[in-house]
Length: 64
Length: 138
Image: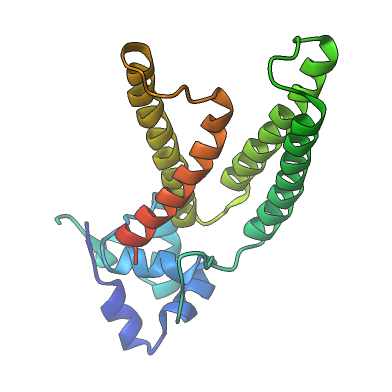
């Protein structure tokens, strides 16, 4: 699964730690999702979408 | 952020895990030392000897309970995945080594490996799992 997390985070000037604190997860989790090493569960994907004020489909796309 | 093999993300579940594991480890070491002091090789397996041997077993149960609680209490799903993978690697290493050595013990003249070493081997496997986690998620 591809995602636009890094771009969206950079647009808002957030560090990985900033985003991790908003999501209440570790910085390692944000890094793993951004780099495509880990696909989040549906509840975490919803939390990510809520933080950015977008839908899941706006952030995550099908494909490697 | 600098990190080494043993650094952990901040999470209260890790603090509780470390505390529980420290207590269980101290009990384990004390129980093993007590057993080696109280029992002698080729002693009869009296009820007292069984009771002494039971203590390290209970300490191992304590360590496994601490790990199980970590799985339950860790609210970060990615960190939980890393911990489960570490335990799976440890289990795989232990079963593979024991299966291989078991075949050698049955069919060749290699020295006998006391069953006591299975748990220390699993603990060593946790270290291998930690290395695998670092390798897959630097």
